[in-house]
Each structure stands twice: as C-alpha cells, then as structure tokens.
Length: 226
Image (tube, helix red, strand yellow):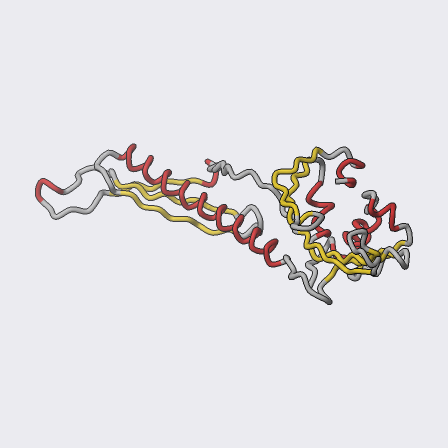
C-alpha cells in the first residue's frame, strides 16, 4: 500500500480477511498505474519477517511469513482481427449423389488464411472448407465464422499458458523458500535472490522498495528465473 501511494498508483482493496488473533490472514489488492505489474512481478514469493512481536506478552523475537502473489489483470475481451491481405478463396462444386442433387454451380468454398502467430512470429496456413449450403455467400460467412473460432481458440490457449506460468511461480510458505527477509533487530532487509540489502528497515516498511525492484529486474528481467 505504501509503495502504491508513493508512486501515485490507484489502489483498491477488493477482499480482506482478518486473522483470528491479530493482523491480516488474507488480502487482495488491485493496483492501477503505468507498469504496475512489470515493476511488482518480482515481489512474487514468500517474505519473512523477524521481529519482537507486539502481540507476544513475553516480548520474544518471532518469525512470521507472508506469501505474495502478483498477477496481471488482463482484459478478458478478445478482438479477432482478420487481415484481408492474408486471406484467399477458392470455389468448387459441392459433392452430391448425382441426378437432381448434383450442384451445378461452384457453391463450395475453400478459405486459406496465412496465419502469423503474434507472439512467436511463426507462420502457417489455416485451411477451411465449407459446403453447408448451396449459397456461396452463406458458405463464405460460415467459413469466416469458423476461422474466427480458430483464432479465438488460439488466443485463449495463449492466455491460459501465460496464466499457468504465473501460477507456477507461486511458492509455498516454508523455511528456505523466502525471497526476502526483514530482520528488525539486526536492522537488515535482504533479498536472497539478488543479495541486495539495506539497513534502513523502516524506509522499506514505508514502501521504499524501488532499489529491490531494480536489482531484481536488472538480474532477472531479461531471462526466466529458475
């Protein structure tokens, strides 16, 4: 929340579940602003906090964990654009049993679409034939509808694959899995992936995490983190 305030991001709390004794058990926040996901995706993972807990009567040093999951909110509307320059048609006579059923005109249509994957740049030809009716214009409409369905399906599969990649990055809350430790007594906040650290714990708690984000993006921004 402090980071969002510092960067003038619009922040909305859509769900908040308080813990039984103290603190927060679960919270869902939405941040809206330029490059919000790009900057904050590195916060994915387990954050470890070590401090003398104000909720402990004996004043003992305690460790707690928070699992942070950052995911982009994508527009679920899919606009299918068919590039006419990549589209070509053939016509042919529809098959029949002979006699009165033989189609004397070329009402069957064959659509060829030179598809280029917008994400990989790979190209392939999509071939669709339609002979549903004896009306060529209607068969063209049907063929275009089938093409749009195929393009829609490809886009949906891509989005699901991307979402699965993000889901795979979620980590369990357990010892050894933390990405960053916040140790109040030692005046130290350390990111275990980049080894970047600072002694200004309070500043970090106030949302000044830009140095951590920069260190992560410089090391892992151009490649997948293992």
